[in-house]
Length: 256
Length: 251
Image: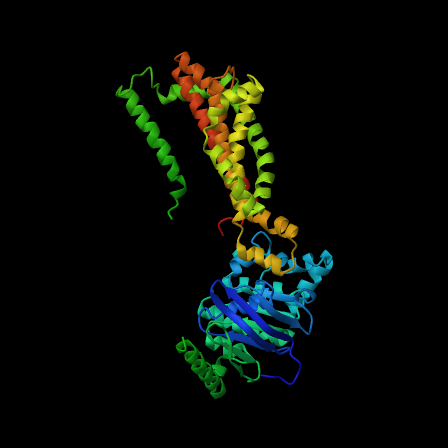
């Protein structure tokens, strides 16, 4: 597990119970800096619970989660929900949605506009941001969500199954967009996915979880250089990595 | 969709008038009870343009608007306050539902004692009925704010007050408009009923009642149609305002 560079996020002794079910029990994990980690595992193993605890949406029963040794309330982070339709504010134009976190931070209006415009130009996003979210396609709305998470220049970005509500064509497009954004910003990223192909394709490390109480079943490296494209999906190292992940996944499913 | 589709509602109106004429010509209904449409529309025209019907119409509008405004001013802030805490709302829910279910007309005698014979009673009973409908809808609108949207605001670091002002308030707007539309309809019903009795001398309710007493059937139908047009118009007005300000509703 140990990476060469010091980990960005350190999780130690994490415990979480829901009623009778112990979802996490003395769980440890390191998330490396500037890498994209995808989390994959059997249904109900607590993938989303894990990033929700890291992002402070669900309080853990016990344990410690530190970012460079600091607690969550001392860092800037971004979170992207699966349900973009309900996560965006439909009464605000897309541009105003993106600048909203800056408004919460008390950034003056002129500077907010400047920062959003610079980010949009930098990421090369081509969406009419004067539109309201409901006037955009699903993929475009999720892209607005991602930009809203990125505008504060977060130290870490969380995405909870961000493409699950999109059709396959849009999912492929959004994977490419996310990869480009990751290459541009180099932000430490944690992605929960229920699609193994996506989990491997986007990741530097694939975290495979067991059934609960969740353990690290494997923490697979996938180091094919970016940009990755459709051809990547048929290259031997992708195929073997994915096959390895699938084998571990099947083993964990059967273990029930 | 055919080019004629927008005109389809006219068909129903035309059909009704044709049936009405047939009923009059075949004397299916006693002609004293059912005057021909022409007499009715003439009575409506002369009544509205400079006649007593016009001033009665305005009196009813005035009372309904006052009642709705008073109800909204009280019920919207209270609904937000109660809806912001689900446990608080649950504790007063039965009281709200009980009085919402109580026919407001049953409250007339009580309000008569409190406010005497006059506009204050009519307006306050109507405001009472409308306020409960608005309160209930606003509170539910606030409570049913999408959880993901609240979480999204929270995760971006919004304080509880910011979440209330920036998210819950706007989230509740579509439901608030449902409450306002139901509230104004109920206020009109109560105002018209109040105008029929308790020592009234004007208003559409009074006009309908008086015309019936004098057996002036065209005037009575004219007043009924005027009341219908008023109800429809008030509802439509709120719908148009809603579409303008709550552009995201249902999307």
